[in-house]
Image (cartoon, chains in turn blue, red):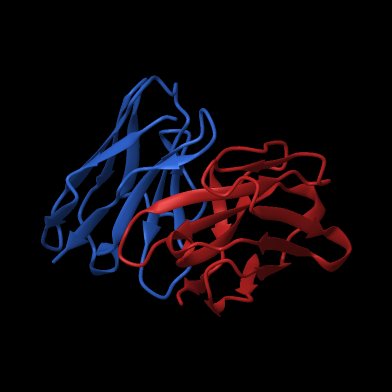
Length: 105
Length: 122
């Protein structure tokens, strides 16, 4: 199975900050990497698909990059509604998720 | 607007069965593969099972293979997960999820339900 390692597991930031979350795959996954936002009591939200494609309706302050085994999610100018937990997911072989990154105030 | 609403969760003893349902609306259900993903409260996410648009293909995580069965009724716009021989470690929120592109089985999930909680305990 492909293992996905996210870092950091949590971080503290302020409104207006730029935040970067990293996801590493245990083997190459080409660009089959997706990012999600989870908030308690709400349906999860797809942010980025295929490494760098912004999902419809997602603000442009979210961006993704990477290839092979190393990927990043960047949130520019953090907004109050961005405080949440973020997960990466590979879809190269079956589906596995990273351990999550909680973005706190 | 796409809506996915899960139901059927609850408290169940180890070894017993439970059937989850997911009611879909707002899109052409039979054009898309569907999946179940679970989240242990306070912990990570695990893909559980997937099914193709016409039910020809069904795939399972090793942790549930032989115990869980995914199915769908396109006439009712509904997805199901039959869970048998439940174990303590099956305790989780179970989400149904829709793939982003109609031509794919695997990939990203652009719509999720809020989840239904399954608690396996004696």
